[in-house]
Length: 248
Image (cartoon, rainbow, N blue to C red; front, top):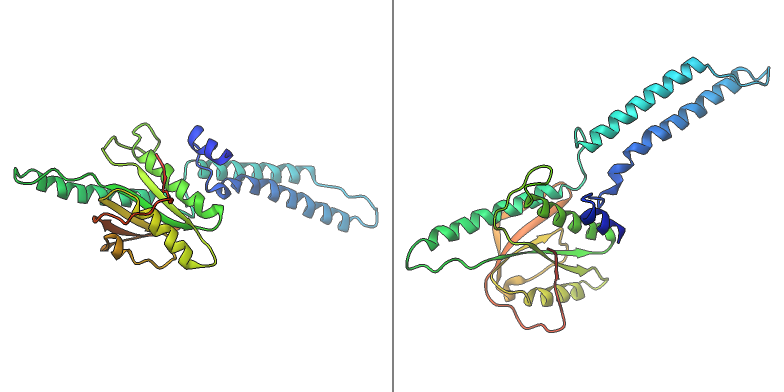
C-alpha cells in the first residue's frame, strides 16, 4: 500500500528501493573507519591502557566521507553514473515506438476512400509473478508508461493518443499447466484487436488458438526485461469467471 502511495501519490518510484540505500554507505563506512582507528589506538597504546585518537586525522576522515557521501547521493538523485538494474523506461519506450509504427501503417491505409479507419488496438502486458519483485517490475513499467505520456514529467513526454496499458498477471504455481490455463482464460476475455507483450514470461503458451501470432522481429531485451510482441486479431474464447487487471 505505501509503495503505491509513494509511486502514484508523490511521484516517487520506489519499486527499485534498493538504489536508495546508496546513502547508507557513507554511514557504514564512517562507522568502520572509527572502529578501525579505535582498534589501532588501543593496540598502539596497550601498555598505557589508554586509547588516544588523532583528532585532526579523524576530522579529515569524517570530512572526506561526508563529501563522498553527498556526491554519491547527488549522482543517484540525478541518475548520473548509476544504472538501474531494471530499465522499465527503456521497455516502455520500445512498446510505445512499436505502437506508433504499426498504428501509422494502419493510418496510411485508412486514407484510401475504400479503406475503413483502422481499429483501435489495445496494449496488453502479460506476465507471471511469484513474489512482490515481479509485481514491482510491472508497477515500474506502468509508472514509466504514464510518465512518457505526461509532458510535465521530468524526462519529457507527449500527449500522443496512445492507449493505456492493461496487465494480465498470472500467479506462478507448482503446476505450470494451471498458470497457463489461468492466463489463457483471462486473455480470452479481452476485446480484439490487441497487441500482446509477454514480459519475463517463463511459461509455455500456445496462443494460436486465441488468434495471436508472434511478431518475429519484435523481441526486446533491456536490462531486467525480456519481451515478445504478439498480434491478436481473432476473437477469444468465452471464459467466464476470469478477469484481467487493468492499469490506467
